[in-house]
Image (cartoon, rainbow, N blue to C red):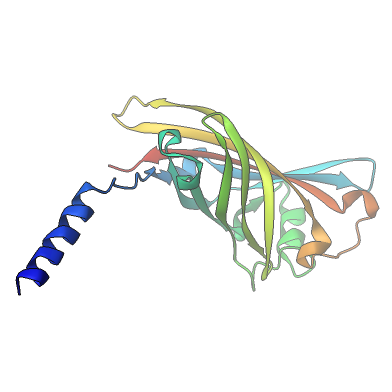
Length: 192
């Protein structure tokens, strides 16, 4: 019996002396100051740009605890697409492009971050039009600090170069429109 008690006491004391793994701070994406923009060639003669107005998500951020603790999850309401032209938006929401009736959300969930407090490379799973792909793209921290309402905010920007056909979007707009620059701008508020 003494041996069992001694072994248990030793195990508990070892657990108490082990360093606690640090966790990054949790933040909630501020949907009124965050968005996803896209830009592509229009018939090789100009550019078409638009944005998704409704996004939500969470991130974990604290450079002091190491890059392995940084992460982000984003959900994009594809029906919130806005190119400032109602007829074009209707066509882009159709089955020719975003097919929002069937795929009302696109998501990104990070799996790895390499970098420091100023930015780096974010890797994760993008699910778009029902297709999930491992992607990576550079991100930059725009800034961080206290806000006037007693909260604490951080902002990031990332740019991903998407090939439309990789996600099954193959409506022919000519070869110049195969690549789409997708910009993710996030402002997030630290959870209390």
